[in-house]
Image (cartoon, rainbow, N blue to C red; front, side, top):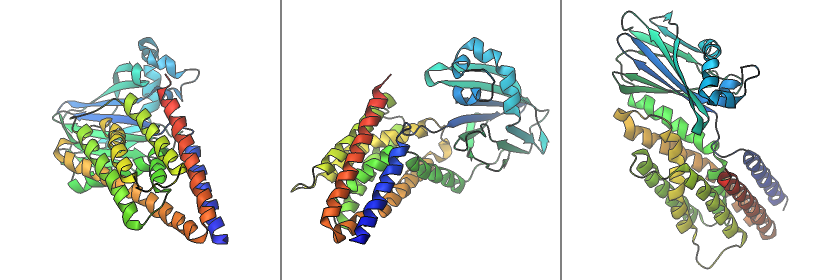
Length: 359
């Protein structure tokens, strides 16, 4: 009984942590996107970043100010000075200076796009990039795409105190490097997406034999892999304004089902597949913000999906044995765990739904 009670405490603590994460909108991760486009005469850097992040180090400047053409232009020099110390690019070991050529608000996304020009007399052999744009927020990540002759040849991800990235001009990024980047991105995406976590927890609450749970999770995996591929290849791509509230409703659905207990026939595999199709579009939203390398598009998609699966597997390995232990020790405690978990999942899903439909 003591072990069962400890398991109950651990499970409730886990749900508490996840619910604290739900105070922020799911997938609301501070992210910026940087493109470096190389030519024989120089390089253009195109940075798209949140107005909130850009305004952080500008005294008395509100983010909304940067979302107007006049306000953004007025702060162009100040932003160039700040970002110039945080985005440092060297060519053959020598630093190259940036000149701001354009600054454009992207009001519908609350972003600002800045374009910088770098000049050189001849195409360098090697280029190194050091990037930490917003050190006040250690969660911030910058996705870097490097283009040569109009083709995306390389992608990198900067987060925290990531070391500089150096590459040879004219070289091609290896498939292994692409896989490592997107595998990590997929794992990271699961663990910053509490909505996906709670959906999986909701599916597992009623327990079951290992083979049964494996079939349920496999159905979810197959389904979201299908729609992730469709959206990434631009075959079918519903708007996020439709997908995100539907994901929230799927969480409410599995929570309510778990709350009312088992039925003669277990429909969870059907739920997992049906809602997995929706969650796949949610996973695709993060990939659509990135320009994927065409030469390794299949590998990028495969690796990102693999990272998602690893993240899901970690959740299953943590939750399923814990629930099984509670059921073995005490059915009364197990019933309370399931009821508590189901209530938490339902409340969180309802909160996200109303948050996402609000203007």
